[in-house]
Image (cartoon, rainbow, N blue to C red; front, side):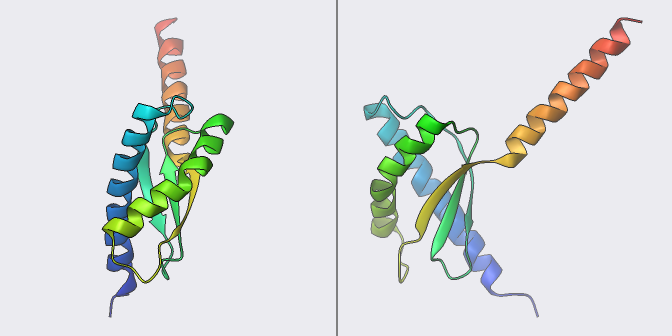
Length: 117
């Protein structure tokens, strides 16, 4: 029998992704300390106590700005999602994005190496 928690955590993750992305768009329109960031994925723990928001990129200044806006983001989630408790948000750069960029660099270098022959 399939694990019944997975589909719900995946649905909640997609919903949180939408909410956080929309709210971040509103925040960046009014706060210059937070650059426009792309939410790539939201990982939700099985008990919904925590959620990790993965971003396309994140430097230290962005991390600080996100932490400052975390209460507003969690309040938006609390208003829009019916859960026993609002997940505690954390933020980190999506490792898949940096891996993809590294692969592109390698392929570009290989392509330039073949053109020099």
